[in-house]
Amino acid sequence: MPLPLEGLRVLTAEQYGAGPFGSMQLADLGAEVIKIENPAEGGDVARGTAPHLLDDGTGRPDSLFFQSFNRNKKSLTLDLKSPAGQAVFRRLAARSDAVMNNLRGDQPAKLGLTYDALKDVNPKIVCAHLSAYGRDNERTNWPGYDYLMQAEAGYLYLTGEPDGPPARMGVSMVDFMTGMTTAMSLLASVLGARQHGQGRDVDVSLFDVAMAQLTYPAAWYLSAGDAIRRMPRSAHPTTVPCQLVRSADGWLFIMCMTPKFWRALADAIGQPELVQDPRFATPELRRENVEALSAILDAAFGAATTAQWMQRLGGKLPAAPVLHLAQALDNPYAQARGLVQEVPHPSGTLRTVASPIKLDGARPAAAACSPLGADTGDVLAASGFSAAEIESLREQNVI
Image 1: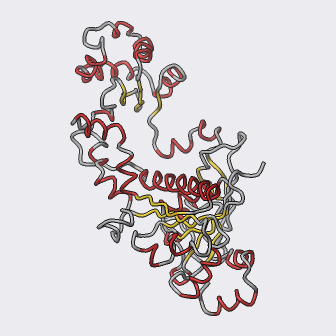
Image 2: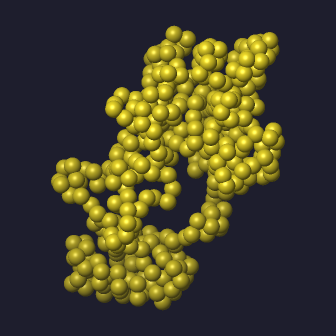
Image 3: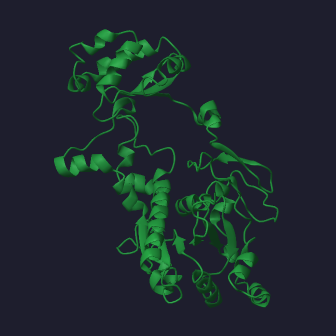
């Protein structure tokens, strides 16, 4: 079976994390993602992101960081800031379905990446813009990154223990969700353009996605004035017990989201009488007496190791071991799921996390992103540029 997005051509002007993560999902699913990189600036800055630098076989920068966001993509070097580069880009856009960027909000218009700039060469083109704060407000020219969004959207005061300092999430989830949202919006707009004959601009910002992900806590505050707060043991704001518990050698997370699972937990720890205990008989009482319940659970779970508890609880009660990063990646279950993938690279085989998507029971194949500019000649030739034109562009340092 062909991959579902084969035939979709996307030009990207992207750097670092959020945009590349989103376009990588498209590339995994078969889209031809052509990564446009400025030859004068060494391409995407992520190619040189330490500490784990790679030899790409050409002497140019490459890194594990870069490859984790750019698998299955082609690399084309092109100076979008020059008139000749703009002319090349417009010819490429005429044969493409979409243009995607994750530049500062004031940059797409300057670089000719908008629908208004490209509709004359391709009325169906979709121009997807991923920025920090959007392109239509007083922060349009502000730079911005994931951690800043976590800070301003309230995440740092929803994460960690109540008496601790503000804490961010351990990975850049706002970046990743913004990339995924942009990819989804791009696909929806391409579908619409194919149906109706007209493309459009699509705007997604880190700030907007961070705010949108507040979901039910936002609804509780905006509609009922109820602002949730950090809970001990990383607990759920209302459901108890749904929290960390101590084992003999570490921690587990248990989630008794229904009465059924609360009863199953009481049985599993050998204390079925807890269900009738007047302190814990209702969800409201369990919330009021959560400290007493946590002490009981710690005492019970402390009698066995995390692994022993998982053997006892697995499949019967929503529970998970709390693992360090290395333990999570070495987890036999993750290995058996095929979530660790080997990717050929000029420096040797890279081991990375695979796509979370399965197609017909198999995960998409992975190829390393090409070395900087390695696909320039082939992409231009396939787009109708003659050998003489390509050589002239190289002499002018446009590509």
